[in-house]
Length: 301
Image (cartoon, rainbow, N blue to C red; front, side, top):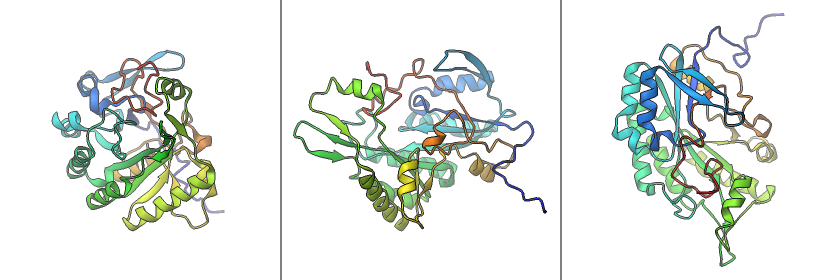
C-alpha cells in the first residue's frame, strides 16, 4: 500500500511556535510598548489563568514562526510602526481584526467604524490582505427597555463591501455565548438583556450572510459553532474557522510549525485553531474597550 502524506498529522522536528497576542486582551490597542519591550528581552512570562502558574516563553525570531495579533483598534500599532519593526527583526505577522457594526451600547470604547475601516486598509496595504482575517464577532441579539429585539448586523454589508475592495477573503463569525460574567454585568443595566436565537434562526442568518459574502468573494467561517455548521445544507461554502491558522501560516511563510489543533481551545464546539501560545493576561492587561458581551471584560468594570 503506497504511503499517503497527510499534512494535518505531520509534526516537524523542533517546530517554531506561534504567538497569539491575544485572546485575553487587546494588545495592539493598549499594550504595544509592553509587547515590544518583551520582544527586545527575548521572552514573555505567561501566567496560566486557571492555576496561576507562570512559565517563560521564548520570543526571538529563532523561536517564533508567526505573531498573530488580535484587535479592535490597531491605531497604536500602526502609529508606532510596530509591524514594520517586527518584520525587519525577522518575525512573520498575521492579523485577526474584529470589525462589527458601530454600536456604542455594545462596544462603547472602540473607534468609529470609518476609522476602523481605514486601519483595515492600512494593514492590507502594509502587510497584504492575505494576512488579515476579518472577524465579525459576535452576532448579538438584545432587548432594551422598549421590549424590541435588535441585532448588530445592520452594517455587515457595508463592512463586507469595504473588505472586499481591499482583497479580504475570510470573514469569521459566531453567535454570542452567554458567559456567567456577562449575565452578572447586565444586572447593572435594567431593561437590557441578550437573547439567544433558536437554531433555525441562526441557520437562516448564516445562510443570508453566506449569500452576501459569497457575492463579495469572501469565505464565511464559523468560530465554535459546530451545531450551526452541522445544521447547514449540503453544498454550503461555510466552513469551520481557524483564527490561529498554522496551515495557512506555513503556506504563506514556509518553515516548520505544528499543525495540531489546540487542545486548550473548544474543539468539541468547533474551534479549529492550531497550537499557539497566548501571551496576554486578563488581569495584568485589562481591556478598556469594555464591550458588553466580552468574556475577557471583568464583570466589575
